[in-house]
Length: 239
Image (cartoon, rainbow, N blue to C red; front, side, top):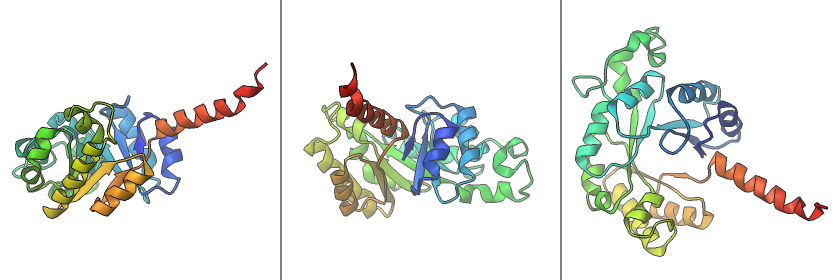
């Protein structure tokens, strides 16, 4: 489930629902480092739900801050080529494997240096998912998926549709077909494929194509649609 409300309270409600994983979104949601920290603290009480955090941009400074506050699974948006993917990998690793700044004494991730081996084990506790969201990215998909340190590739249907000239049509047959081919390509490279799909029929199609993880709902969308349905049900009783 997308968690896009920016609310720790809503995050806790969702985390206890039995869902497998949540995505804390900073790209299209009103989250910053402090609200993301609050939600990570809330989610620590619900270990049954895996947590992915998406920064707003592939900025090594933002990624460094997220890792320091305890995010371990990072999803980086708008990766168009292997160079972008390699830069994202470097941002999640300490030297000499990467460029992550060293500040573990100040970091929640190391429990403020209570984890004595944090610096030598941290790289192995981080997973990186890169998002492919454009026609350009799909044309270089195998190169992106082949970058060492990329654990998964997530396809963004909305931006992909826009890139294909079908803005607002993520369920267009051409878009769906491209996503299915991309899933097959990612899996063929030995990496895990992910996608979002709110339509259950598309979820079934993408699972059949080999996708490994799917976003099937969003907290704000569930609230919006539920509120609308409630209002519609009782509007007839207005005087």
